[in-house]
Image 1 (spheres, rainbow, N blue to C red):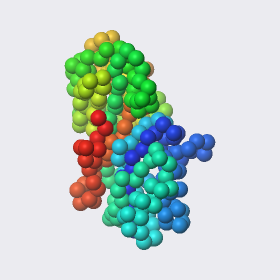
Image 2: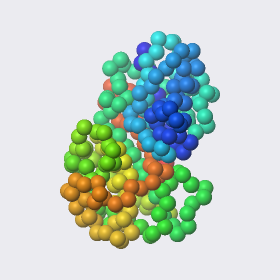
Image 3: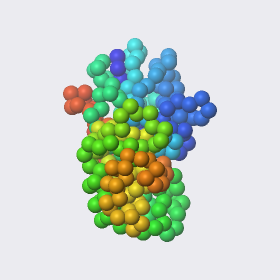
Image 4: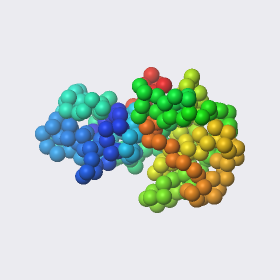
Length: 259
């Protein structure tokens, strides 16, 4: 049968989601824990791979197994064998044609900026830090230029391996909550470093160093060198993937959303 899981993790101890020979990864930890429960090797597929230091509120994965276990066994048994920085939130059997990556219609990310003169200590590694005062109004004005279907070449990593740079950005909201500036993004899919590069451009605009139209100029230039600094990974969260309703994949409850 095919099983889907929702997984939450702190990305700081890991080299990212994907298995690497040289460093601990989220994928390796999850597969090791599930293999212990199944008493045989388990391989998982995720909705969206995250980089070193990037977190997830509800990463979606699936795996195939011939072993009969109820949902509680996968959750409790998996969590007992996982490090404290990773938790399985839920587990459920899904249809054989469900695929964590290819069945997803949309993905949601959140980028959190801690905006004050002094760097954070308690939230170190969980937020990006920006000492320059950020104005949310210009950042939101700039965000409107990026909505819709575009060639996001200027907003992806130079080493991005995606076959096409065209993506559809459905949502890009900017809001302030006390010392936090929060970006919420939703798209059909994201390119490598796309969110962090968007955040870098918006932070430059929010600091008053560029006008809101600069976000459009960077987009139209289709050249990564025009886009400025890539924002740090610590403020980035994979929030959830959204699937057709018939698969029965739970949405992330609002109460579970960070900040």
